[in-house]
Length: 189
Image (cartoon, rainbow, N blue to C red; front, top):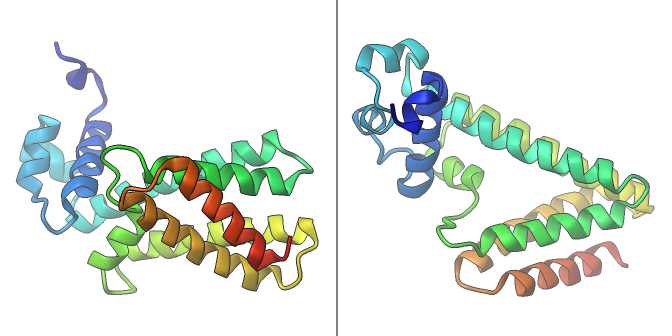
């Protein structure tokens, strides 16, 4: 029995979707490709995910859950030091954006392919974006930064640009350092 066959079916399908959607794009990946990659039958596939929209939303929920867990852990490790959490996030973005196989932010990529606000995937993207921006706003408020919600939005724009910069070939430490420097300029520290 192979390792892939040891995983629960739903997890195998989600793993296949995460890999293919990220590498090729949501619209480019058919159910047949995912069925083959997950080693499941069509009946089994559709029992777990009745529609492609359901699978896209689950894929994005899994990506959001991973980022929520990482940010939550960083905040727990750096209680009382919001600047350390922001530096950690900048370093994480730099490292992620510069790793081999990086093809951009999965949420931004998916948003570009899902133009309708009521698509289940867009709902996940919007909810996660609000959560992440809220986390940044809370950290900025802890730092005593004026207009933390506005500054958080600006830092999210920098994050998005850093992702593109890393994708275009800059070194992780360069992306992280630039993100920190630009972030300091925005928050005035």
